[in-house]
Structure formats: structure tokens, C-alpha cells
Length: 168
Image 1 (spheres, rainbow, N blue to C red):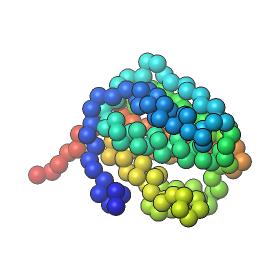
Image 2 (cartoon, rainbow, N blue to C red):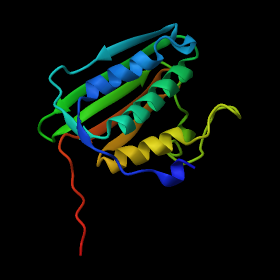
Image 3 (cartoon, rainbow, N blue to C red):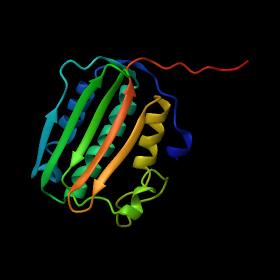
């Protein structure tokens, strides 16, 4: 139901590193995270972004939890941020040392209701909703994965608010 009625972002000036820190603080003490080494490689000179912080938290939480579930109780979760001043985009990467994603699933990852989880352990909406949120922010999300080695999600967000142009 939430998927069918996605709300428009309520954008404000926001520190992406702080949003990621909040996400880690919310989950790091859960049992699922006990044998996971969380490595934060944050660009301390990251500019502020114009985003909806609660929607960004939803995206980051989804990626973090998926990554940790893919590692099955041990591994490394690496969170990176950096800024490319030439294109004025903030880059966020969520890397895991999990089992990776088979090639046949890569093109379906962002499809609504696609899941590889057992019944009762996921709706297949997390990545589809995350994709929609990033697109609403005029950003991009992509994924790289190697079976047996892990997965990296890449997010690019514009630093400045991108206004919609409405033709009258």
C-alpha cells in the first residue's frame, strides 16, 4: 500500500553523513549486526544536500539491512561518501562482503515485489521504493555484485535542489 502512494519528498538542507550515522546507530546493537564490522569512510568535507532526510534514511536503512542479511552473521559493511565537485553530486556507497547477487537477478532487483527471500521475510518492495525515492530526488542508484564476494550499491544525489519544470 505504501508503494502505491509514495509521497513527494519534503526536501530540506541535510547532512548525508549524519543521516548515515543515525541509521548505523539505530541498527548496530541488533543481534543481526553482532558479528558485522561496520566501516565508515565518510568524506568530512561533504557539502550539504537538499533532500528529504526521512526518505534518505528509509533508503539507507533498506540497503544496510539487506547487506547485513546477505552476509549471514559475519562480514564487513562499508559505508562511503564522497563528493564530485565537477558534476556536483554526492556519492554514497553501501558495500558488503556477502554472497553476492546472481547475474539473472541483477536486472530485476528494483522491480516491485521481486525478492529472493523466503516467504514471510520480505515483500520485494524495499529496493523498488528506494529506487523511486532516489529518482524523486533527481539522483541515480545502481548496483555491482560478484557472487561469493559481495555487493556494492552506488547512489548519486545532486547537491542542489533540482526544480521540476512544468509546461503551462
